[in-house]
Image (cartoon, rainbow over all chains, first blue to last red; front, side):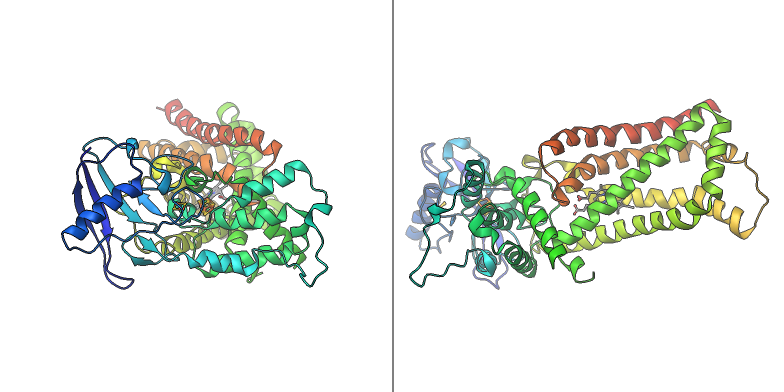
Length: 248
Length: 220
Ligand code: HEM
Ligand code: SF4
Ligand code: FES
């Protein structure tokens, strides 16, 4: 299959980038999207040109590294997958494919298609954990009974891989889905309830400081999330936050 | 309070509350206007009550005006932050693949409503205030119906009202149900409520359109 790729090229964080056309040929439907880019990069190496930089690691949808805006959608046209799980059979011969970095002021471009998502790390570090005293008398978590539904919901929230597709999809570059998944995963469990008030306040404060937008409830994040994180988490975080504000 | 309204979640909470308040007001406004379709006398009576009752004029009216101003000012504040959150735009953005047009364009439907409110105040509110409080005309409990009908003799005004109500419907089609998500209210009842909000968003503006066209056509 023959494709016309339009790819964002940007020398470094401060350079002005632009879209560059790359025609490619001989692409097989069974190839993954990233393999297709690997092939293009090999050709660029042969020609002595600078290769296209993009993030990737596990290539099996679990690490959250891959992050491409493909034809205007994060992780491309298919649903419930990360970019690394996208196959070229989702495209047709002769297609034009736009490949851009995830765009948000809080996700500045480092080079080409790689963006800096440490804003997510800082939200996580704000209180995305349970404080446990590990001084030798740690209690086995399994001694605390937890309702099956709660455990399942918490688990589902915890499947967020922190890829940032929610931010990339949102017209406001809002990080509400990510942050709410992290808040919910603990808010649903008795272990997490202990610090629930401080946690939601600290994580939302950090989220705001990073410069992400507000939530307009468009639902784009839920549709594009490779892990199917539900908007219910955002409603829960709103509840948690408002309740925390009343408590002070 | 100022500190509370600095967070994105609190701002959206305030946005939702002011929006819900306006939705309630809209139902009340519609009920009274609708009376004009079938009874001139009852319409005059109710309008006279609303226009002269101390509680309505001195308490409810200022609250309403504050609610409207708060809502659109907060709308601008949210919009400014949202625009700033993506400083470099996508070359290609496939918004329709994951969200509805109305949900992404609340600011535009809102701006049309704001423009309409300007016209609406010019048409009814300012003349009413001047009539009552500046020129201090004697009470005339029978003037309201005729004033209303007189406005809808103009085809241009009638069209502007109809178009505005379409945008109001678009605004509410997303906004009314969205506000429940913003206040964190999402449970098994919220699902049923969603259907109600969508019906409300269509029926109430359609009702206003009907009233405007009714008076226009009735007096052709
Ligand atoms: C005066 C002009 C108006 C402007 C400029 C305006 C603007 C906006 C904007 C920008 C939003 C979206 C906020 C966001 O997505 O983050 C919004 C939401 C909303 N608006 Fe308006 N609006 C106006 C009038 C109205 C009126 C007259 C009503 C009701 C009768 C209304 C009801 C709502 C509701 C219920 C929401 C949803 C709040 C939420 O998402 O939580 N608005 N408005
Ligand atoms: S919520 Fe979904 S889209 Fe957002 S970071 Fe987590 S996995 Fe990615
Ligand atoms: S490379 Fe790990 S999720 Fe795609």
